[in-house]
Length: 261
Image 1 (cartoon, rainbow, N blue to C red):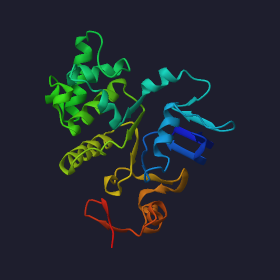
Image 2: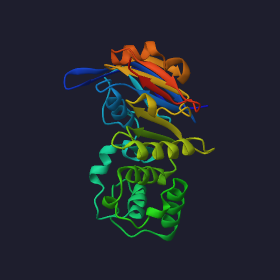
Image 3: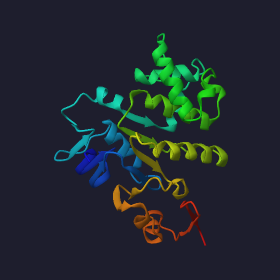
């Protein structure tokens, strides 16, 4: 399998501080990874590096989808990366309905500024239906719940048939029911035969579905652990990550919940 992501010897400074240190990481085609860490762990900076919005110091190597950063048109490359982040919801104006928002993914805009074609409409409806939100096609974005908006943003990100999807704290603003419904959607999508490699970023242990079989735990810009899910989601590693004792309870589906005793 080819590398979808390859980062070697990366050190990133932001605001005069080192926010990622000695960072080395590879993701293969079709792999699904979680990135876990508390606030300030370096998760957002890692996303910025992957999207080409933050650069490591000289000597590092960053390749995404086979393209070496520094020798690639990033605006074109970003069209092949499905990035979904809660902050996008701030820009989901009521001016557009769900169908227009999804189709806008073709243009790399948040909202559509042109007429769409019948083929574009058909593809958007197919994607929304597969994610369980086809019935929202004509509904305005600001009339939806947060969970529905996230599904529409995921649909938008899939309009380019990406090889890589980054779900950046996708559940952070959701209530319990909305979160579980979204996680069900993500779980079903990740198990599809043609699913892209998925990077699922979270600070919540119980968000990490078994479908994310590999993972990485960050703290203060350092990699505490990376590898197989069941090996690195240990109480010792979580103590290192959160500076507090955490007991793990596992349900029959393989989901883990933290318990503070």
